[in-house]
Image (cartoon, rainbow, N blue to C red; front, side, top):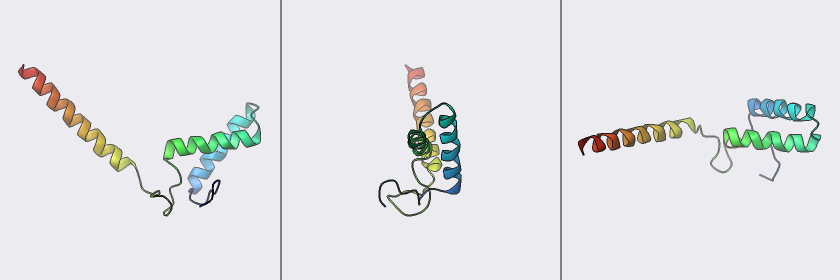
Length: 86
C-alpha cells in the first residue's frame, strides 16, 4: 500500500477526517495542512485503517485494551492486599 493510500479506511473514518479537516479550514489552515492534520488525528484515535489487510490492521483494539485494564486492576488489588499485610 503506497503512502497516502486511503483504501484501508472505513467510510466512518473518512467522514471523521472530512469533519476534522473542515474545522481546521474554518480556522484558516490551508486545505493540504488541514487534511494532513485530520488524517493524523484519525490514525491517532483509531490506529490506522480498519479494513482487513495491510500490516495487521483491521482488528478491534478494544478487546486488548480491556484485557490490559483487567490485568492492571488485578495487579493493583494484589499490591494493595500485600501492603495491608505489612
